[in-house]
Length: 93
Image (cartoon, rainbow, N blue to C red; front, side):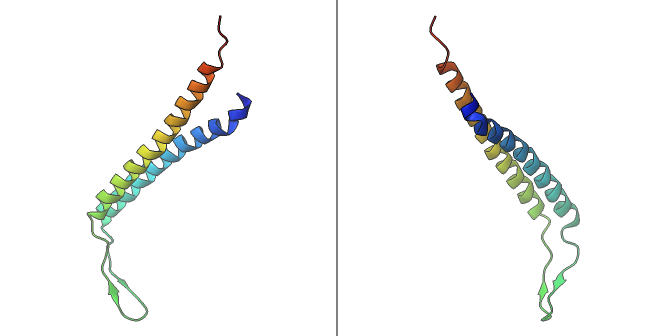
């Protein structure tokens, strides 16, 4: 199955990226949930931008989990397709 080497690499990349996205989403969400964007930001024009609400941390966590699910599903679909191709190539006895 040399001709499908790219799909094997892509499957691994999607799995690794899925786990990275999940970890970053959880860490970012926890940081925002704990700190809540402590201080408001003041622009050079003197406009005050309010801090990020703490509830946004939950949204970051959910987004990380959702994107993990998408990427891991893509990697599993590629795996199923490669298994299907391998089973179709078996010689008939």
